[in-house]
Length: 429
Image 1 (cartoon, rainbow, N blue to C red):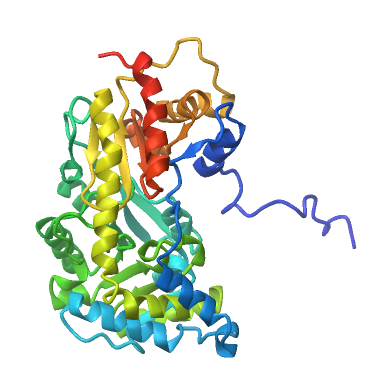
Image 2: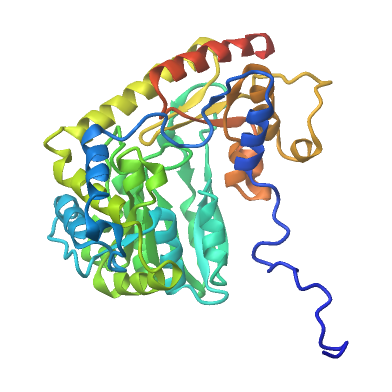
């Protein structure tokens, strides 16, 4: 091989993965592991602190004994699961869903969204994302060459001084309209919302949907928390036939059945959308985990008989209300969630010691990273800094907030409350 053809650096990574900052998950988890306060109370990542219901666990165990459940599933998903999802969701959509043409199974909701972007985004196509966003949206859009266009949601003006409903976080519709260009191909909408806990009202969704219909923009509706809503919940695809034609709805077995490690997700949409999502999914991972698809199907089939949906919603709302009493006690305002299992708390009243030493990779980040680090090291409670879900230019919107996940056992919530009382000496009015 001549010197002119030899690569100087054969291990140079692709631009899509090179030069990224250390992600928030590894920062928080590494700090938690090294905290002098052990065991840490981890209310950061949204994994459940308890098992799926017994009838779902039993279904998973029994599936492992079936030969066909230990082999490849069809690339679009096991027929039993597609049928179960179609039957479960048809009443919500107001029509009979075709499990063969309008449902596709994916390896978690995240891979499903990647498949959707891979199916419809070409190089330099634009996708509008509302801030704060689930961080995986961004890399999923950029992988096929898409450009992310950001539109921030705005918190209530008095969010730093008093508790208010998550409903008061608003999209400026004029900002949304200005973000649309001839290259806009898709928008991503998340309701119930992570991390805010907002459930978009029917009126809000209608305004967004009308704009998408006007400009022929595909709507990727991330509804993975669709069984955890505490106010009326509208699915954007149900607003009109014109909106349904543009909408891909994303769901998650992991979120529905407390099994985030199972990685069973799905997309629902009309055939002209779903067939291309399925084609992309086939090229990304071919098929998804067979026994856990079977177990998720049985979960849907039996959920109503166990009154599971109502009980799970009531249980999570109870955990949310129980945990949030600590903020009332401490006088720290929070955004009262309308859905999901996250709560955003405003900590502008918490004064960090002037001489407190933060490591360089934390010191260079916004204040919420310092708050998160301080709580982990001094209080023993892990929470997520939400500026990770904003662009740098809009990070100031949430630099005084932290996100807590309440999907934990009650004794963990109580321990977290007790530890958080240690913040009293740092709170200044």
